[in-house]
Image (cartoon, rainbow, N blue to C red; front, side, top):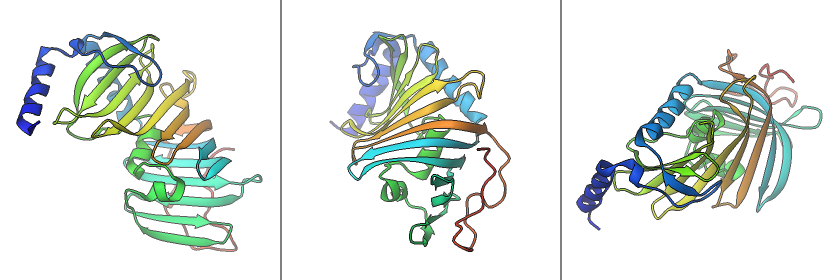
Length: 271
């Protein structure tokens, strides 16, 4: 199909009304009935508004990694700052640093305590995949850890449908009318799941959000589950302690010179 015909068909579908576009069920529920377009847009706008005030995170999480390379359980100190600053520190039984990955958005540094190896360079899209079989760019990883779906420019809201569990599913397409993102909200209007697609509706990754605690950081999910079909990898994060928009000390997203086997100073996260 030619570009002009695809775009024309897409615009016609949108003009007829989002509510006419129920979607096929995947993931957490089945889409069963159309949803009013104004409600759909309000959910998306609310997600963006909550995200506008969430710029950084510092916390401690238990990570479970299951993939073709094996299974790993670890304690991690996680610090992120929009748009693409990231610090992941893997800790051992006595809270010693086993590995640290940092990026300031432009350059990265990776330290491994086992052999005291150290690597650095310019950030590239496949960095997290190479290091941890996580098929995300650093910017996507930061957004998802903050509970915000990545928001690529040019996506259009194409359909909205109710789910059989009371939630709502939105689908966003590119200017060619190709599905690129699916977002599920729970019955309370909170983010429940995000899926990213490439042309051909091949799933790139999915992220699930659970364990919302209204008394602590309202609107933040303390449990995040990530799935990456390309590497058959499942990553589950359970946050034990979280600070939203903390004041971060200088040097969090860089590593100092090695001294006596220590990779980097602690970043002030409460145990």
